[in-house]
Image (tube, rainbow, N blue to C red; front, top):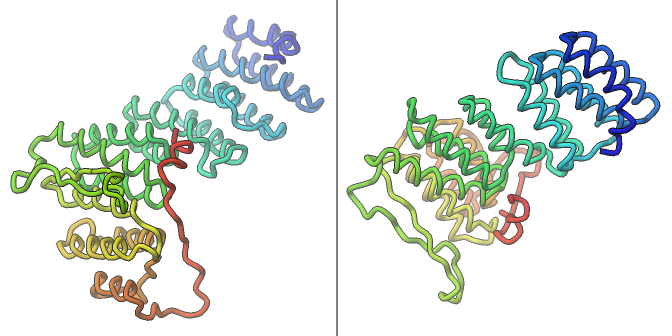
Length: 356
């Protein structure tokens, strides 16, 4: 790094103190030097001093001092206007890994790093590579609940695969496969991320059946072939399969992703009708899909993908109300309602660049 020669004077005064067992003195000197460099707008030098000092303090078992300098590093990033690059992200992932899982130090650093990447990168949810790194790190440490939002926010296909594996591992401690399927599918669909949703549900279904063979249905054929890419020329159409299981919610999750994949707002009436039938059929059986919170999410997905207006009020028959909206019945509500969100799911050729 270009700043290394400029920062050598400061580091020669700081790093030996850590080796000599004087972390407090090293921490104070690092802050003093970095403050001077930042004040004189020598941002790269300040960054190098803070990064190397924080790294060595963390290696020496000083998470408090190391995290404080890492937070200062992010302040310098902010003042400099540092964008998300391999180098700027790499410093943070090194420090996050060294912080360790004890206490709240790592969470503090992760939260600040993600916030910086959201502001200075192209993704409002934070840099996908940073989110993936954090999620996978936490998963490998067994912190499933903490890893989940990072893997969902990453939105990468690799992240979706890791999330699927984590949910399979998590389900061994209890919980139905369908519950975990929804926890992956619904957030990805709400973000318009069809490829991640599809990658997740395919991977999760395959792995959960492998770990729990009793999930495979014995009443019907194990798989149902469907047309995944309808085209006027049948030679161009690709085939797809739904793996039938004994878990209704897992079956619904597979079908929901395929149905949303065909959505074109109000244009594809067949897909709209398929969504209404799918939700109505499975919600009529009760269970998780009939839960009011889940129903609310499904209504939002119906708006996003199929341009189906929400019901006028809490209906006694959600299937009938959704069907009425589909067939053009008045949606009701006042004139002050905000415009609903709309999205067109990203096609495979475009989304590949985003997810990889």
